[in-house]
Image: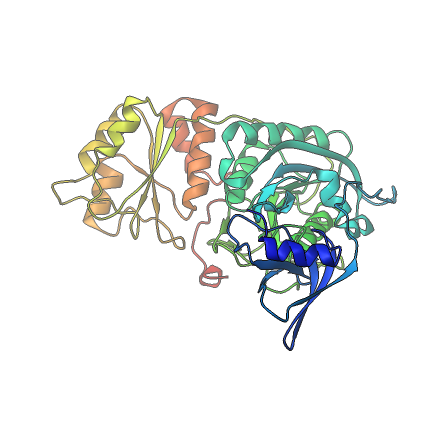
Length: 441
């Protein structure tokens, strides 16, 4: 939808075009910023200006509104050349899409993936103060909600290639919605990792004045180039301000808020470290340490892994849908300590027992986010985990349990081996006991 005829006439009189820097005065108020196109959701008689803080403001065209052209502005098409110091620690950057590689599409006002790795770095040149970016790779360019297991495999292969060909660490730019699934997947797929593999993203696109992308990317590069951490991790804002970032273990990270900058928190765990944009790294807990060894990968995943949520009136018949499609394993997110409906007409116990007796693993997790599944506290829990044959996920997040099971299903095939390995702490996903200081960290 275009601006109204009255608005267009007023802009033409002042020789003002979309993307020009303008000053608009209305009454006692004055606005300076970039003139934006009218979007599908905007009123045609309302002028939209992007302010210096990154936010848009709509100004109704009424009598007394004055427009002044301050500066002619063209769309940026050239990527600035990045000056680098090859004496800095070498890292690679892998781009996968998401908000951090998105920009506003001004015809609709929506945000969509559009930037490649070089453009992202060009907008955050300060990272070259801490690292030498020896390679950029774009594995895919998708929104986070469209992430899929084949992409995990390709990312793992590329990480292995980069680490074994000269990079000290790898930064992966990724959408935030499913970043914790990918961080868990890479944690298991990179089997002998001893170098930092850091996922980072943004809650606000990198072309906005209020973006969190720049600090996240800078801290991620610092972690990849200078930390002695040899694990997959998520590096994102630790607070809503531009203070510092957390390095959160890949199997412990979870997105906890739809829009806050500090959305990622460690679940049932502490962050591995604090990373400040000036290069300081503060260790917060024990971790696998950096070593110059060869990186190995087992990029496999069983796509037919089910994730099912328990709720009041939930019907175990839903499992038949997955059975008909030959699903090989199940993660059931139960209530509290890992419960499923038991003493009701819709008891899940018989169906789960039927599945486990066919040699397919059933994993129990909790909707509580924090805490652990306990198979022994209640009678109903004993029926699920001792009689029906389900396997408790200890204090794993549901997302990590899902990814771990899918990886094990494809790696081992044998059910007893899968269940045995699932109970092992492979990549920091299980703690022997729950520590009170990790709650709501």
